Length: 303
Image (tube, rainbow, N blue to C red; front, side, top):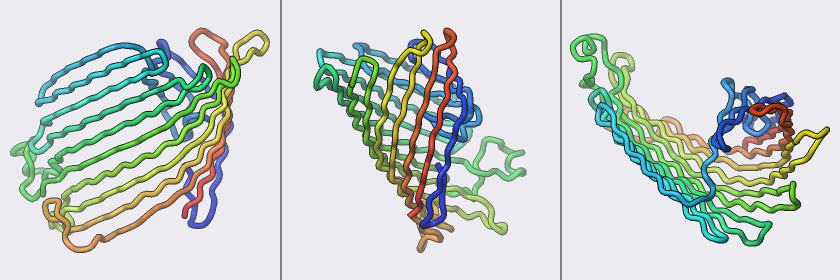
C-alpha cells in the first residue's frame, strides 16, 4: 500500500522475477522473492500463502495442552453434496501466562459455503470471525524484578488489549473455457483493536489507551489461464482490484484502570481509496520449482 498526501494520488509499479516453491497437494505456496505481483511488496523474508480446504467430507478434532495453563481446542468439518460444499473450522485458546496478570484468550470461527449454479459457474460465501482478549503485566522496575521477576508492579493499572475481526466475502467463479477462468469477488471487513499500557511519564506512572477502528470494502476480477509454450505448461493471471479503507484512531491519556477520563488527546480518521492492477506468468520448469515474472501497479488516494 502506498500512502499519499491529502488530495493527491500515489502510484507504484513493480516488475520483478519471482520463484515459487510448492509443498504438498496445494497445502501452501512460498514466494521466495520479497516482491510479488500477487501478494505485494515489503515481504522481505518472502511470502507463505495458506490455502484452506474447499470441499470434501471430513471431521477433525485436535486438543493440546501445555504448561502455564495453556489449552488449545480446534475442530474442523466438511460436507460435500451433489452441488454444494460446506467447510467449517473453529479454534479456542486459553493461556494463563508465565507472569501474574498475563492471561490471554482468543476464539476464531471460519466457514465457506459453495454452490454450483451450473457446470461452469460457482458462487461461494466465506466468513471469518475472531475475538481476542489479553492482560499485560507491563513494565517491571529493576528493583522489583530482583525481588520477583514474574510479578506485577503496584502502579500498573490493569493493562491489556482487546481485538475483534469480522469479514464476509462473496466469490463468483466462471469457467469461460477449458483452460480459462474468470474469478470475481467482493468483500467487507471490520476490525477494531484497543490496548491499555502503563509506563512512567516524568516519574509518574500513567496509563494510555489507543483504539483503532478499521472498515474496508473492496472487490475485483481475476482472469486465470493455462496454456502451453514450447511444450511446457504456462500459467498466467491478470486482474484488477479496488478497495476503500477507513480507519478511526483515538488516544486517551491518564486513563484510570481502562476507564476514560475527559476527551481524547487525538481523534483522527484516515480514508484511503486504492486501485490495483496485476499480471503474472509462471512456467513449470522443475518438479518442485517454477520461475515466474509478474508486474503490479497500485494507486492510492487519501481523502
